[in-house]
Length: 194
Image (cartoon, rainbow, N blue to C red; front, side, top):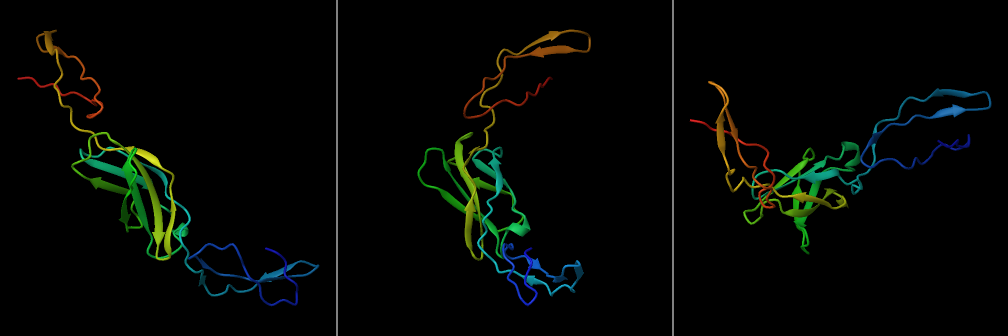
């Protein structure tokens, strides 16, 4: 902090964070050195302001068929800048002109799920997440691309065959299911026998 003239009895402290409690001390100094600090002032909270920090790590994906799952890193309390803090989630199908907007009023939230039967599996969406409090809406994150949920495989594996390898084991093989743009990649197979 800057040194204040010895005859000055007040100072304005700047560059403080909004909606944060502070306490202050005053220290006297002269050519010999610095004295003991005063007792702390009473706690004083700065006024609220519109939040300026957008959520980070906006991404998502997964979920069930007909779902768009959007996730983000929550904004820490010291950056919320006031009461009534929440998130504004905006999304649109890739190439669409108009945004859909949803409000998530919970401070701790880090995810939003949009459900709509008209969403086709693995559809790309442009997504951005912003913040608001009682003072107004703040900054939005940059746009991220998030894909809607996958669908279950629509076909069975072909070419299943079995070969006896011992009295207690059979080797089963099949042709892989090709990747499909609408159902996604196959994560595993289940082999059933009877």
